[in-house]
Length: 436
Image (cartoon, rainbow, N blue to C red; front, side, top):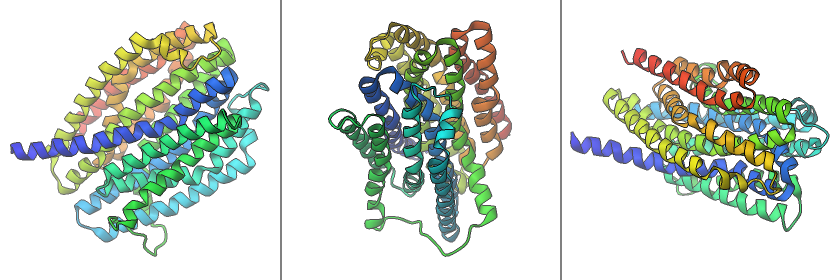
């Protein structure tokens, strides 16, 4: 019994550590842009980037929806030794990636200017925002395919390779960001080209999984299976909602910040939002790291192992949350200064104040992300969707507007932690009901 528990913990540590490192690397795509744009283009560049980030969240979320939904079902079929259906899942996912990629590319070609207007860019930052959006959408096929392949390779026994691909892709992005923005003076175009190159480099690393013939998933000649597609999308929807939720929150907060403080407010929120993406990626890494082993245990029908994995994840979230919040609480001022190259006092004061309030949400956000993934990994799609949709749409948007009206700037910052606390209560209730 003790040996079995040690094996569960060993697998948990291996998958979660690899995936957290990889997700931090992946989230650095945008953080690197934030740092170099802030120092190379100032507050206007930072505001333009922050207006465009929701579109990145939607592209990345779509890739994760297909990747996590497909990889979850793939792991379950592998656990049940139904290898043909496992291949059918991969084939369906690739067909869906192709269809989604076409839609995003067409949006980049024909709708980038319209999207820039909808997102609220004024004349000072319109051209920069439009450039970032257009190139980002043209690189959508690479982002989508990279997300899917990372999920499948990780579920196919390659968590370290998936981590390596994400980290090296992110490292390449950071290096190219510096080269394109400073020595080559390419401005915002250089930033987005560096970001777009990262998934291409990541996929070249993942190719090792096929070159060494370690892959157990293959393409088959078949059309899209409606029932299988429905299951994939249903299981993957919480991953999409989690990413899109962050994009929607950014859009709403940008709108409120523009009303309260103009572009400086958007830039200040951009600092907090991008740091939040990094922290969220840690929790997403924990959640996604548990998915392959939880789905495998679910395929075997082992409920005790599923509970063990969830308890390890929650303990990890709690410990990390304490450490992360202390770092931001103690070092808020120097952290914000890294992104405030113009030494704008209003931006500095607003972002420091926001950082301390906004990040009180992190233990509850971590709980909600892990709980949603646990529901997904055990084919409980409705509770997973309920948690994701409640935290991403149904609570935070009306709360942000209401608290902004009542408390102005402080209300905007507090809407995020209040939402996550309320959703944590809902998640616990749903878990207890599903465990009966």
